[in-house]
Length: 37
Image 1 (spheres, one colour):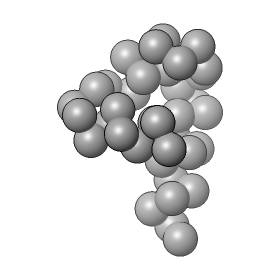
Image 2: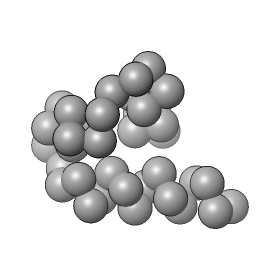
Image 3: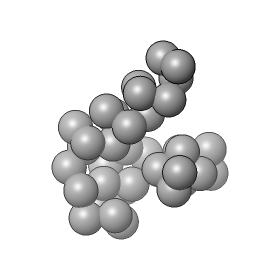
């Protein structure tokens, strides 16, 4: 998923949210969903 790729590249949560046009909470949700699997 693109969110994980951006995070691995060193983007901050706020930067990912702005780049993708989504909220920071949504970014956190997607990151947490994958780590908990």
